[in-house]
Length: 351
Image (tube, rainbow, N blue to C red; front, side, top):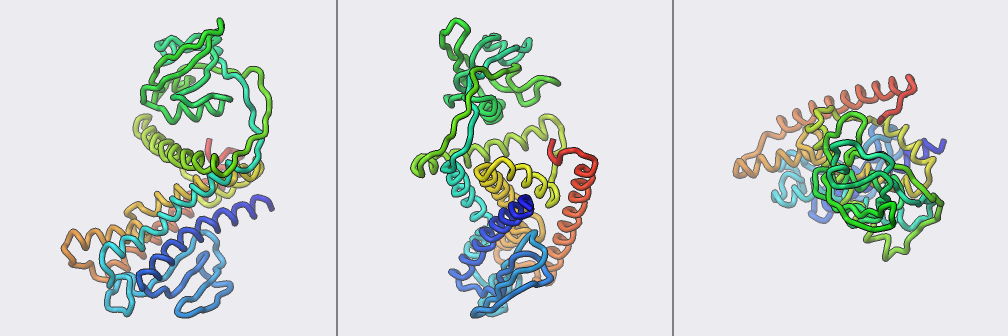
C-alpha cells in the first residue's frame, strides 16, 4: 500500500506540474483551453468551469491539456494562430515546470531530518597503473575531499567521483602519518573489469550515525547545487553509453513502481529526491523531437520557422502525432513486459 500511495503521489505531482505549465502559459497568451485532464481515458469524474473541462481519468500514467486549434490556425483563439515564440513557450512550458520543480523538491528534502552514517573513508588497496596509483595515493590514506567537497562516507566518494569522470580533479588526503596532502587525478570513464574510476578499494572507519537537517536558507542553495549535479550525472551517464558501448537500461511504469517502493522504505527525503530525479528525466524526454511529445510539436513549429511561415498541413501533422503516440504506447508496453519478467525472476529493475 505504501508503494501504491507513493507512486500515485509522485506521478500525480509530476503530471500536474507539467500540465499546469501548459495551462498557465496558454491562458496568459489567450489560447482557448478546452480540457485539463489528469490520466488517460476512460473518464472517472469531470466538471466544467468556463470554457475548460477539468477531468480525472482512469489510467494515471499521464495527462494532457487540450488546446483550441493545436494544428489548425483557422479555429478561434487557436494555438496555431499565435506567433512562433508564443507557441514555443506554451509547448515547452510543461518541461520548464518539470525542470523548476526539482529545485523545490531537492531543497525541501534537505530540510527534513535524516540519519546519515559518517566516518573516515580509507583506501585499503590501490590498483596497479590506476589513476590513484599514478597520482601517488597509497593504501592507508584517508580521503578528505574530492574537488573541494568533503568526504564523510563511501556514498560521498562514489557520488563526487562520478561527477568528476574524465576531468582533472584535486583529491585531499591524510596519510597514515597524519600529514595532509593534495594530489590530482582523472577518474576513468571505462575502468578495467573489477575496478572503479579511481582504481581503489575503500573501507569506512570510526563510523557513527548522525541526524542532519538544514534551515531553508541553507537547503535552497544546496538544492540548487544538487540540481546542477544531477544534470552533470545524467550527461556523464549518457557519455558512458557510448564510451563503454553499453545499451541504456530502461524502466517503464512497472519498473518505476518497484523502484518507488524501494525508495519509499528509505524515508520521505529520499522519496522527494527520487521524485525530483524523475521530474528532470520527464522534462528531458518530453523535449526530444519525437511525434506526440512536446518536443515533436516544437519540431513542427521550428520547421515552420525554417520554411518562413509555410506550415505542414494540420491533417498531416495530426497523423504524424497519432502514429508517434501509438509507437510510444507500444514501447511502454514492451518495456513494462521486460520489467515484469525481471521482477518475476527475482532480478532488480536497475542493476
